[in-house]
Length: 433
Image (cartoon, rainbow, N blue to C red; front, side, top):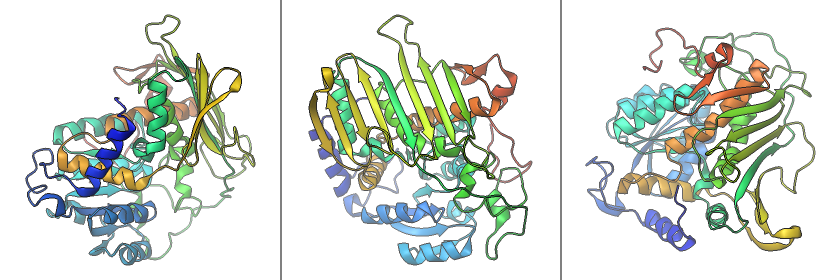
């Protein structure tokens, strides 16, 4: 990916703020009225979706719908976002031809099924990270976006944050020499979610709609709002929750390579005694072989400790880039520092990752017809790292070989089966293909 200069980035962001007038991927309903025309949006998922709705509204988008299977959350989001309607069934949004954009802020298991339905209905899509629940779904989403000729932006706000883009620009220019190793870490103290037996779902919560195309499981209070992150059928663990932000920045700093050839390491529950299924501890390395010769290979390291009461390199979640002439330490919520030999501080910059700029970029991409900063292909490759780390943990393997072209795990049938998932047979949102 080409990283523009800071001046070019600022100019493009200003253009997005003002609005452009070009057609969106040949779709005449947008652009005809020029910069002042409001793009109509439906937001699915009313937790994270409330922030997305606010950011979109700040950039002249009209929030026509908010949707959530929890009627109380949908009603509260409608009031907060000044939305036209609150609905529980997302199909109401897909069927409305006046809706231009669908923002998907559901649990992970709904990300691709909802996005595919939106694309099939002719909508542009903003999908929260990770863009997929598994590797196969990510590929389906990339292919569907290209067929539909619609913009799909993934919620990796770092890609539109000026401070982080400047850091990557410096890496590209050789500020620390050749970057051979990138590290991403997710170090924080999560809560114990406890244990719970199956029970009835809460009132005004449509559990069948919430489960959607995933296998039907009995409701548990430890697998509900937010805690779904830690269950195989619905989430992607903290690697796909918070970790994917840092994984994406690390891969970006290495030059946005395609998939790795292999993944090695460990992942398990070492601290929490609760219903979480995903690891609370992971240490994983990803190998990018290049041509196999010294100077061409790259290594990406991911560390994950969600029981840590302390920070690393002064950062709870962060990145480090190790080059032949120095290193760069980056926190997406604070800034970065660039060091030369013997740890001499050369440059630094403060800042926080910017949702507003990311939404401006998304809307500008729709109006102009270009790819957005966090295009679906970028999101797919970064999400695949989280998925591979989780497959490694679920199978207990120390190493897995991955074919970057076919997106299949080589020589391990059990691990290979986890590249995709099982759906509720015959469900209306089951992905095709």
